[in-house]
Image 1 (cartoon, helix red, strand yellow):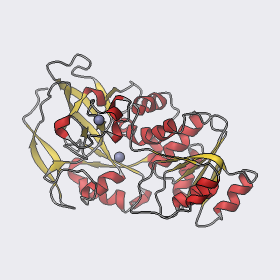
Image 2 (cartoon, rainbow, N blue to C red; image 1 turned 120 degrees about the horizontal axis):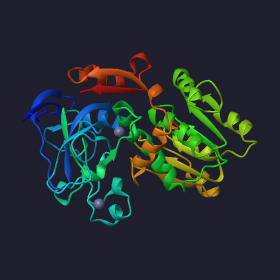
Image 3 (cartoon, protein in one colour; image 1 turned 180 degrees about the vertical axis):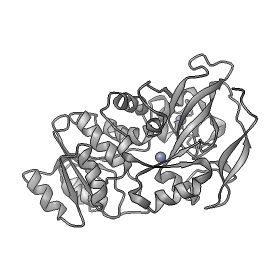
Image 4 (cartoon, rainbow, N blue to C red; image 1 turned 135 degrees about the vertical axis):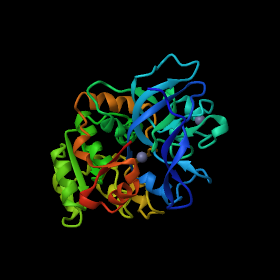
Length: 354
Ligand SMILES: [Zn+2]
Ligand SMILES: [Zn+2]
């Protein structure tokens, strides 16, 4: 199929003004490929982008979307790693490849974050993304999609890689532990599965919506606690013989979530923070200091954990399908966002088919 010169794309103008418009199809530069996008998904960061509250996003018009997957249709002159027809998953961040953080794999906290001239890209966040018929990606953001995974599942790779990056920073070793996962959104529901896949003895999932907690129980959570209906601290004491969880994955992002993490982690335990917060939060840091609690904040999908996530998905150890609840066409992007933000029909992950 010849590549057209123009395409449909979701373009952000001013805050909350997102239009489906015609844009030129991008061309691949050195190290880049052009993808025919198959589908894309919406995450909380896209909502911040839409409101123009995400730090570092371009001031002018740009194409939204950072979770997408598709097929390579054209490659830059120097690219022999991928070719037309390759099905790929993408990760959001391309490091600048010149700062010390990028060299060690911490490209989601690149010291040149958002500096396009220095080579950094965060697709759909600091430059054009993938809510479009075509997108350009550097090869170091691409992972060959295993044959048994669909494009929809591939869209979930960042959702999986973010908690996996937190676990990586926490030392990567959960075997035999009791892990408290806070927040049964898409990230928390995948975190539950990651903990089980990595050998956690018990996973306790907390949240405020029974429907989401029920999905968590189906995906492997050993205990679920609705913190609006039950006393979290009392339940945790009961479940852990008074010790608290060996580690906590904070995926909730509520105003009291960090305080709950500190109250329910054991002495010397670890907290991995994957959530984003709507503003500053209050917590008693004496709880952390008194108990040698180690806190690891993780931004996005660093450390090449997208590839590891795909491997776990391909082996069936992480299933994305129960988390993918709604489907829309590109022209229905406004309905897709409304369904996601208002959680219509218990929406978890909303996919846009291009
Ligand atoms: Zn995201
Ligand atoms: Zn860098």
